[in-house]
Image (cartoon, rainbow, N blue to C red; front, top):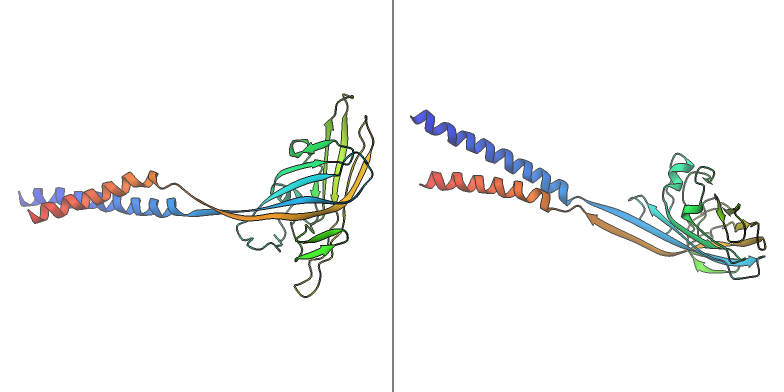
Length: 231
């Protein structure tokens, strides 16, 4: 009789320990937060041959967790495809008034060379205000059908690579050149730079409720054992 009474107690203890251990592990996992650093750039135009409107554009990168400064260098990402995968939003309106977006890009023919994203130290450029600028060399290719012709017109955005240097020396920024030759309307070649307008790091915690039932069951199990011992 004594052995039979002790066995359920031992069994319940093991179950309670397992539940509590699993709950504690799940709680640790569920509270691990992931960080997302987002850098947004705007197009700063220095010249345009379109003559219809002032070129505008924006470009957003979702960066690795290790990036914590506006002056950053992701280092080699292995390939252009990996570097382009960090490009999460993009829009551009050429000097001829025609607009393109991320869905119009041909990512298989676009490239980032070398395969990394890099920005300048706070500096100014010829015709642009002081700020942080993209130094990575890239070529974004794409096509889009515009009103007036059923054929898809090709476009290209090309950013010349620059030199980051250090805090005591100015960064050397290569001017970007964006061009489009539509079937209807004027061709355009826009020159300028990509200047950072926003740099934010957001912490995204994983929800906790999934681990809560396991934690409660473990606590209740230990509570029941303690009560039995007291009785």
